[in-house]
Image (tube, rainbow, N blue to C red; front, side):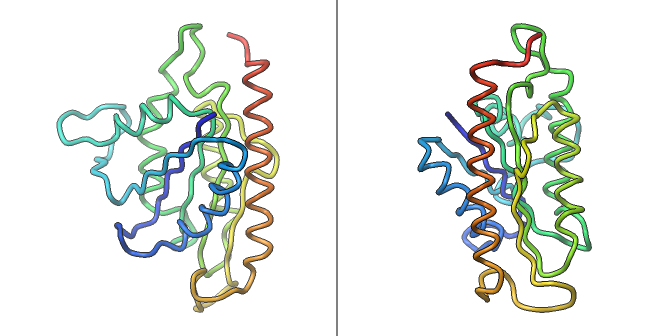
Amino acid sequence: MRAVVLNCTLKKSPDQSNTDLLAHVVIDELIKKDVEVATFRLADHDIPPGVTTDLGPGDDWPHIHSALLEAEILIFATPTWVGHPSSLAQRALERMDAMISETDAEDRPVAYNRVAGVIVTGNEDGAHHVISEIAGGLGDIGYTIPGQAWTYWNRGPGPGPSYADTDEGHEWSENTGRTMAANLHAVALALAERPIPA
């Protein structure tokens, strides 16, 4: 089984990403279940705005799109900025809009029989809002969203330390992340055994 993680941090490599740190809790748990995981830090790629799969020369999205079609599990990992997912998360959803009209050999939307979950970091409240925005978009595209297929960390309202700067709340976020991985894996297995029919 394969998973793709779209890390929607605004920081390019090799800068430390708080979102990446929490995502690795989920990644490590998936690897324990023999899931092969590929991660794309979108800030490191040239992804022009648009709603089609391939925008021509210089567009890195087609490679990522191919990885999505090879994976049974998708994880969106995003920071929270001004109460919303990062601009890169929104851009990825916009590019994935093309998948609604792409079909498999049985004429199903290509996202059918794939599961998705969401990871959110930020030092202000709003994680549930961000989760609902991304999960709603992925559901429209055709992904199955299992129960409790998310985790998040935030310090609370107002300025404060980032995820990497404090141990506050890590135990809850990491336990929830491990549960997220287990639920994504279980539902992906169920869909592989009994796929949604055409």
